[in-house]
Length: 290
Image (cartoon, one colour):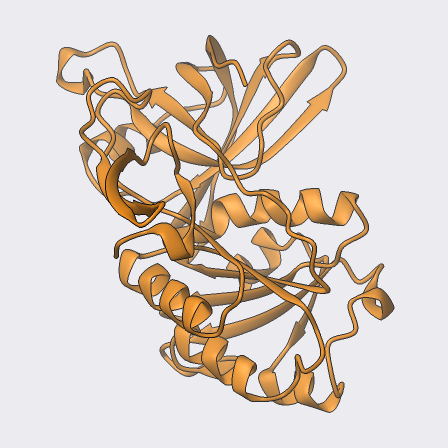
């Protein structure tokens, strides 16, 4: 897929809860349609202190009359994102994108999208692409503290929220029976205020052990903090389940030239280096040397 350099215009910016912010930008209608899991490389400002662009997963992309609209979800992690937070409606940003390789939708009965914190961004886009194909995604979403506004915002009121106990009462998650509900969401909170009381990795393991998904073919897609993704990958591989993970690394060039984001992966029985920015950021879990 070709990537382009474009000048985008800030359309809206707002806090959506949980320390996360939602930025919507307008692009020319000719901007390539991205795959879920691909990212935009954003130049924050013209100042020399921000020579390096920042990568942000695309959380949504829509084409409208004469324009395209892309969204990202981010948290303020340093000076660059602090400056990004001050961008107002009508200001410009130059971006390169869409970059990287995204998720592939597997042939499965149940699609589990496991996210933590801002890792929900590429999985929101993936879930919408699934719904367009008649698939109901099942989200497992973990946060440190419960924030109802965050839940309502990121899932756009299209989710049916279930606890693991409620999911057990269904006997099994019958995806086809739930078409029209949008998405099924199982929430875990580390402050134990809502849904599953604990980490999303514990929720994931509990669901696999609960027999809820017996006789179902399952595919896993995950993004979030490195330790969370590592555990989801390990559990999936040990359970012989197909799993794709979106990895977060510091990108310098973002297009595979500098090799600064290389990680070891297993290919054909050998350990080789692959670039997260251009060979990923989405990899098969069994191939990554965590």
